[in-house]
Length: 203
Image 1 (cartoon, rainbow, N blue to C red):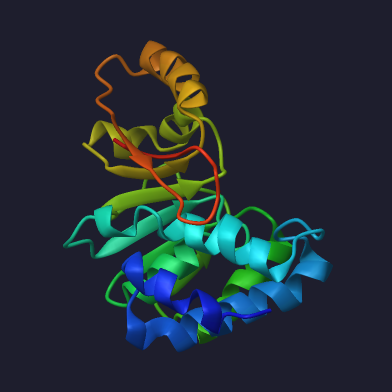
Image 2: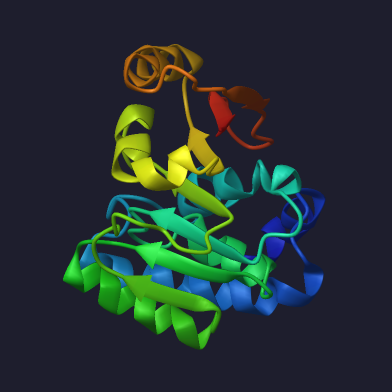
């Protein structure tokens, strides 16, 4: 369990040096709570948590848009990527939507580390004052747009962390049947630690 060994890589990916203590506090909380709450795989080692989840969330960090005042994260689970982004961008009011009451309790604990978090249950029909929606490992693209249809119609912006290009293209076929005017940019991401296929989907 060596967070310090990963610090050069975290900084290289654009994470704020001043926020490293908060990031470590969050990762320690995530790691210690996981056995009870199953926030990530219980079989995972600490290094795998860092490589598969934390570094994974930071891959598109430099592409995060400037000027965001409020963001929403769908299916927040253990807080990846939303808690990490809330630590990185303390000026953003970050709304986390998570249905599981147990996971909501964990996310509320994260507010001691990132006070700019707001934790909610169901995604509301209307998202007010939201500049961007983030999601990782949540639902297919058409479902994400469906549950936020009113927001999408008002030129809503989405920052979606996805894996394989083939799967993204399959999801987009379904999404374009429902949303004829859908405009998407897919940005390939390269992990410095894993041989994996990762993409950022921008809508």
